[in-house]
Image (tube, rainbow, N blue to C red):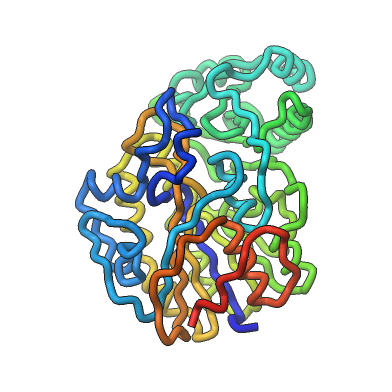
Length: 397
């Protein structure tokens, strides 16, 4: 193998401008053709990202306040998405070589069907309130006190293909919460109602002013329909380390080590700790706060601050990389916090590849699919490849 360890960081939703097919994707009736998550954040604030600048993020697209630089130890480009959709699972699955040709069903505009909710009530013995698309924190303010009085389940969705259930840990014990969510997952496996994920959303607090979600979240995802790069690495006895929600996104398929994270900051600390350890294989991290806390909530300043926080943590990670390590930074879709609505946006995503062993650097041609990342990782470790994507390993000098 050329690189003993590959560190892959998905900066969740940090797109770099509308893709060619963005006219086919909409937010509240407005197509995504003018979306640009990274670019618009920089235009809305004084974005200071010196370490990403050194790696060449300003060479990918124009970013206000960020210069284009001479690249000596990194390669950069942007990548288009081939799958149909603009959600987290679709993006991550494509990164690892699996195309999604039928978008996951969403219930953003209509709520979940009465028949689905009736069965969930019957099988759990609890009534349901909510059934709307909502922010996870705002719906606690609206319905959390009612839930505490009645024990009714707060069911809601978002722009993603997801059914979320918010429950107070002192009203419904956490193991019972997980049992309820498992029932919901079983019900929503039917083709007419199939959603990408069911999520347990535990919270604590005494009233609407101090409700706070806990770290006991649990995702019930769909298993990928085919084997991905993760499976091929695992089958060849390489380490496949999943940090953050990666294990949930792939339902553990092909993963042999994993841990959750409570924030972007925690994710960066965990991947840096892994960089200090001896392993051979892939360490795969998702930084979810960009998307969940700032993109969907249309908070460009919060999003920008989170980018700067991550930027400030990159030097420690890089300092702990060995000469035979490869670091890749990318994203899974866009979520322009200056855009209409609260949905993801159909965008190109950035790709930065860095190694201390590189003797040069530069701009690569635009990659035609996220699956080029999985193909490159498979190529490096000499394992089986999926049918999608092409390796760019030979271009990294």
